[in-house]
Amino acid sequence: MMRDNKSKTVLQLVGVVVVMAALAWIAVPAYSLFCKVTGFGGTTATAAAGSDKVLDDYITIRFDGSVERDFPWQFKPVQRTMKLRIGETGLAFYEAYNPTDHAIAGQASYNVTPYSAGGYFTKIDCFCFTLQVLQPGERVQMPVTFYVDPEIVQDREAKFVHTITLSYTFHETDMPDDAQAKLDAEQGQTTTVN
Image (cartoon, rainbow, N blue to C red; front, side, top):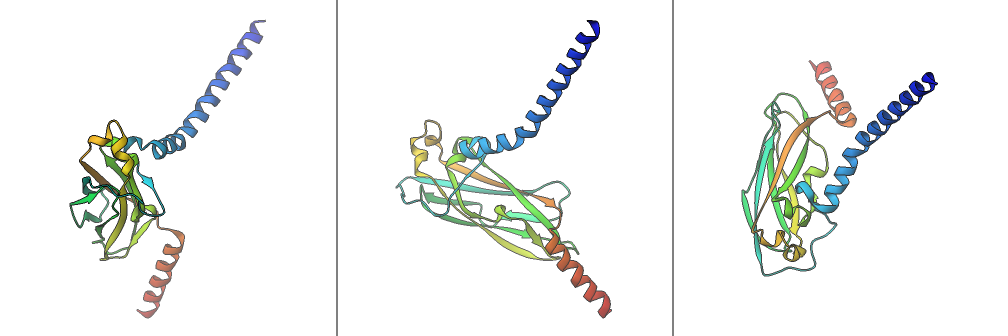
């Protein structure tokens, strides 16, 4: 009988560990989905086209850019602020520069503050949707096309927002296989020429 109780306890503990591991595994994608649906945490919405409704109310968009620690790129918004009518499509540019002597891949993460406006800030197209690779000494301007959903004026909290800040942070990522193969081929040609 004592042995049965120990076996039962061990099975229960193993079950708890399995359930906890499963919850931990699903937590990140579930939270990400929650943020995309609700705009929680400054997560933005996406759309295939601009808004079909433009209001006479104006809103100011601030742009911010940074890089993670030890990431060698220089990254900043070309324009710091923009004033748009709510629902009007905006186009802003960020500039990235790779001052190193080798190609580097980067991916931008983003958020919107205040958080209550996150679900109403809608991106149509953005450099943050794809991985970016900059060659040595390359400087590029990367666009983001967006609008603020007119539904913001119906939200209890967000309707009082007059300024929204769009922030990006670039992080280094592994070089994609196709880009790495191209670099290897170019370096091989350079080596054979020398």
